[in-house]
Image 1: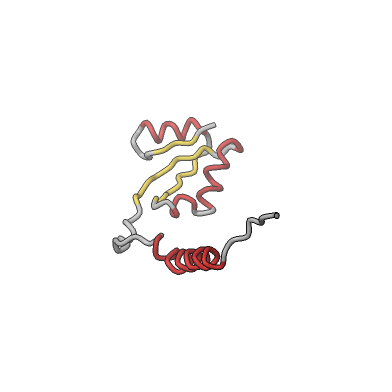
Image 2: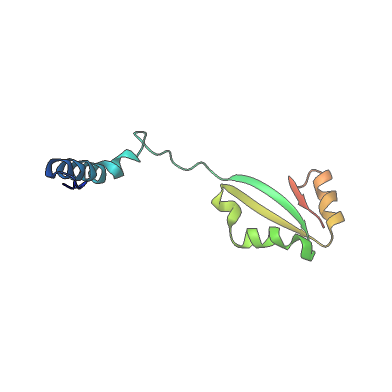
Length: 100
């Protein structure tokens, strides 16, 4: 006499009911009960960048608007060299300096 491990009809129906309940409730479980807050105003920041190939990532990030996506209103001050960018930072003209 051989026995098989086939699920019974009742067990299959119970599993199907649980699966349907999870599918029905799934989208609601991920939602928060709090209403969404309006976006905060962008923080103004000035960045001095020395125009060298080494500092191109900062220029590309500004061009791709990566800073604004994170809530930063960036003003880029382009400088001929990194020394001039650092001087602008030390003088308090900018909050960030990128020098190579």
